[in-house]
Length: 203
Image (cartoon, rainbow, N blue to C red; front, side):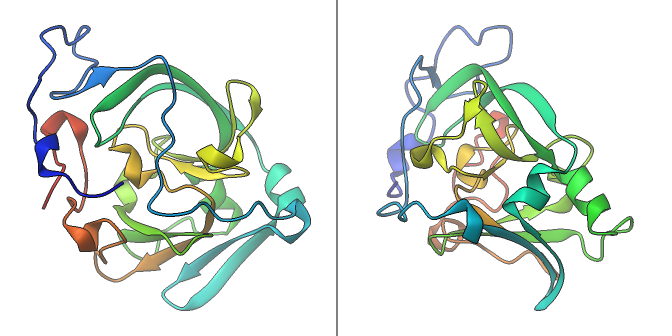
């Protein structure tokens, strides 16, 4: 998904669908597949782990079976990609970030920033406020089916109120950081937050 300055808001849709469609976006019935490079090879669920760190210090880790045993949640949400497509009423199931932090014993989060890591070396930064209070999950199912590999399966971050590059595919780690550390696309000119309704595409 190379940076393309032409995404800066031209070809705006006149119909915003009751305010659901952000500026510069167009609806799709499909689910485009975009990555920053070749997709990693699918691994064995027996080898899958999700880790949680505070700085360099590990504080919690879950195997696939341990992660699946955590309380599950479902969301039906609209999603918006910086490449200007939006998809309404997508159905997801997984573990809310609130649940994950509680399972790690982090009732009081140690920092206000999180750097999300993925299997392919990808990373993206988020304010903790965008991940808690039911705003984000680690998703394992889409449309009542296990999440397909090309869409980030077996597990991806889902932060539907931000541009979809923030919803990292193949997620394998969350790291609390003392400052807002830029991730893969943020280092290459993308916005540090990415609110689609404010057209926060580029820094």
